[in-house]
Length: 398
Image 1 (cartoon, one colour):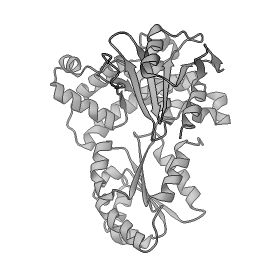
Image 2 (image 1 turned 90 degrees about the vertical axis):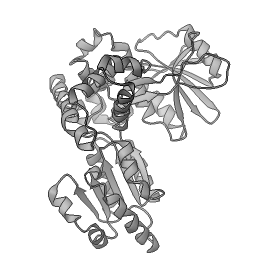
Image 3 (image 1 turned 180 degrees about the vertical axis):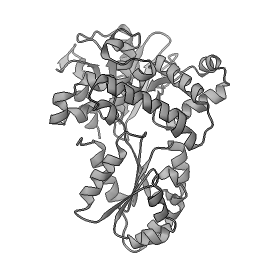
Image 4 (image 1 turned 120 degrees about the vertical axis):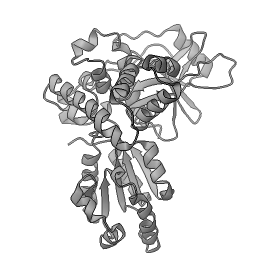
């Protein structure tokens, strides 16, 4: 079983908050992680698991106040909470009553696959009582820290298949590709309509695929809208939905009053590299190697791994000016400003634009993430570093 890096974060949050909500796409590993956490709680207190997609479990909550009262002292896991959003209103009273009785933390572990916006609106009444933790796909550092996985799964396989456990651990690339095609179809035809928005599956698939083709590019909503024969407003709303579902990420440009003409449009990425490859019809590494998206796919894969482990007080940006200065990723935390370039080459070379960008933002540290195995200096100021080592370094920021 894979030890997810979010495990310790969630345990810590349960020590502080009455309720913790794990957010992530379907099949990303939320339920497996919740069971691991429940098992660790069994040493101190009993835990109960309810799947709210299961009719039998939903019936148990016909009188939720009574059910929760009869299981006081237990960690109650509520899976697929979006199926019963009305439960949020009940939880506030239950939590407050238990708090007055001296039980202040570790009461509920909530799992959600719906949009962040929908869940956060539903849970507004739990302000100060509920903490959120996003769960992304299996990461490069999680594989690095697993002796069993690190022997069978390298960085390239993770990049090709993506971080969904069923895709990554499939017996073959063909099986992995079939699983991802089914995942995309199910999300478009069943999952998203169940959340509420009435969007034609074919339209949303075209948009999702167009975003995959634009991986790492600047988001041009007007251009996308024209291609889809939609209004810019509808197109933006559909992109925001994919972003809320943690399937798409937008990265904002770095802004500062430095007297430069800065690019203002965000960059857009399909968050899971395996899903990006599926949307582009790339079933194997050979397919990927010969595709125009080879470099941008690697950039998105590295970026997602890095952003998923950033501490809460670190801010990610990209930097680009009309004069040609450009940095793939800027991490800002306190007085530190870390410039990160992403290269697929084993002998990475930096462009003039990176040096200009570092001067503009006054970078305190400069790194190039590349697919090799060893860390080495490129010059006095720049260091080439493998992805897992860069992840470890960013984790230390917290």
